[in-house]
Length: 427
Image 1 (spheres, rainbow, N blue to C red):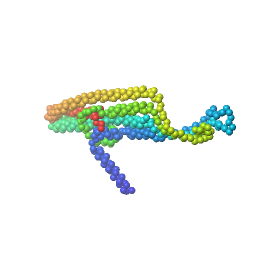
Image 2: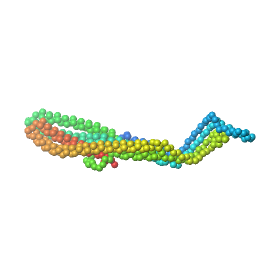
Image 3: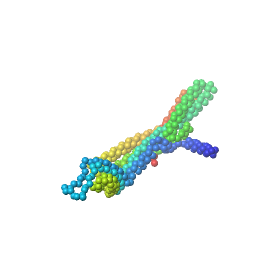
Image 4: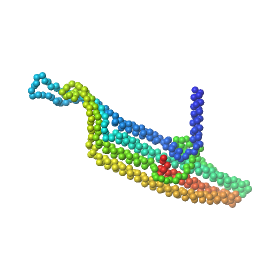
């Protein structure tokens, strides 16, 4: 009992250690994609599709097994066959057949040739299951966009928190310089209070940013099924260069639907072919095969049966035309999807160019604003400008850096949005 408790405690500690290591390891965006996919409830539908396919295929394949049917009937008829001769023959008496007749029989049949019907039915069920699987893939792929929004939202908040700390550092530097002026009697306490009020505003912004980050982190944790605390670290993704052709799961869905239509076309031909099977009938009734015997007798019949329904040829032409129309509709949907996707790619490429140009000017603006702020700090220390002038330059540099953060994250997010639109990251 004691050993069992020890093993349980050690297992819990090991599990807790693994969880702690998982928390310490930065979460990458590719890992977030995979975790969201595995955690999404709809992923369990894949197992249901596979089970339904196996059952349907198994049922269709049982068509190769011998088929057994049992039937019975009891009838009464108004007249029966009678044997009468114009002249009576001494010693010869013909039996009278009863008007109430009974029959029960069982039949076993074995398919010899079915025109490929069973094999095509199996392929039809497999193709239908594959179409459903690709529909599921399309739905699961949409999770990537939701992961992008939360993941890059957290990264932006992290960068804004860092920048806010730099702003507070600049304000504290200004407070120190103003205190020196106050001690020397060359500045008023109100000057320091102005900076302190601005510092409190920065503290409030930190509170807002952390609250937003917590909300985003909890949503990402719920989406991925991974516990992400306030200390969770996200790894900043590397920049991407989109290339190659569109490789979205929707394209595989269109191909799967076309393959399903190919099998439907085969079914049209199959159902119009002759069917050949072997059968054996065994029964018991009155009368049996010998109608001259009015008693109950067993009997059997065996042989080969040919079935060929020709009525299908009436509609075969229009049935094939319906398949062709469905194929044209799928092609139209595919062309429309590619048109819309290429349009989105063009727009996203334009956005990427815009953000790259903005980042170039952002760096120049930050360099200038940092120089102006440094000069303003020196002027504040010498009493040339007041705290309001100093704060104006500090806030101007902060705004420039905030713009740089925004444009940088927007560039990354646009790159991964383009990657998601093209589907180039699908393995």
